[in-house]
Length: 394
Image 1 (cartoon, helix red, strand yellow):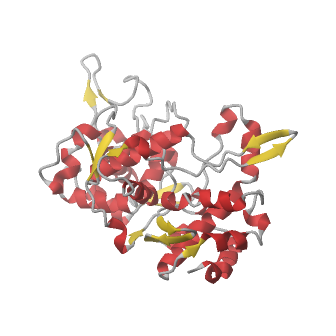
Image 2 (spheres, helix red, strand yellow):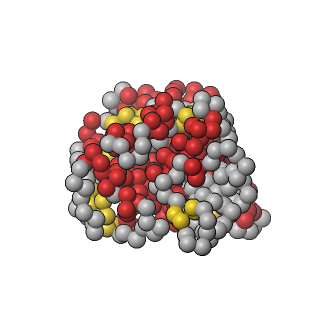
Image 3 (cartoon, one colour):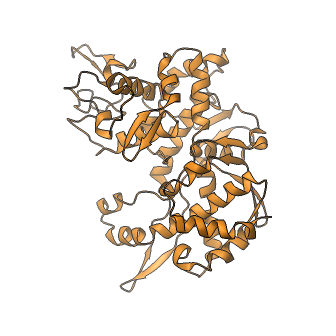
């Protein structure tokens, strides 16, 4: 199941390559956990043995990760952190795991992973090999949110401004009365999360040949694009604000197949951090209605996917009326539900199935792996959506 990545370290695919090579050296065909991915001083293998980006400081007798704020930090690796010190409380390693899965480099079973066939091809080559360009290109295009990024880019003519890209979970601004207070549910991505997701996906787009910062020269060898842009990717900070697109504006004309769309359980963000910000009321209510939010977002994505397979279109007005027949599954408030559902259609691009629309009719632009999309979806929800499917098609 693919999740929305939101940590900057995962943006450097060369770091992802080093991580996967380390995991292969240590585990081969066996599965590994999140903790196994962290730097372990006592392990026979660690990521420093496969990382080509380490630097040597004159005052230190070993090489260090150049991206840590404190080069002598026991975290050791900016991408995963370490068992000895993890300043991100496992957020970094979890995001790295999600990136590996989203790119199709590992297969997830619960909270464990194992290297996939694509992953083996990925580490079979050195990062600077010409063959890597095609592998990276196919990997990023398999990830639903990356397709969402490309769909946003197609809406812009000419130069792209990074601030015009706002890929994330939809914000519905729904409120619930709780103990005489109106509490706004936390349904969408916060600005800081959008910034991190955008930064990572832009880096993937630069690495794979879809985007280039305006100030960077175009690579002379398209088959070595991933290598020629490395000086920019390896920078500690990425300050570019303007980009030039390097993909065909007709990219979505032939319904590209997306192998790793967001799945049912990744239709909402994690609300755990709200407790840390002393927002227990918002957190508790958001968790209370989380399944309803998942259900209605999944309904949009799943039905669009079925429409795409059948060369149909979806009428969002008809969908709204039919979801109202099962309010316990899909409705938080009947008030303005149609407008809320229209806002929620923003999840489709994030999941990997963007669409065009005329009035209330949505036309899907991609096909997705429905088996992966439905992973974790309750049978009750699938049965209901299958039952109404023909009634919402055009």
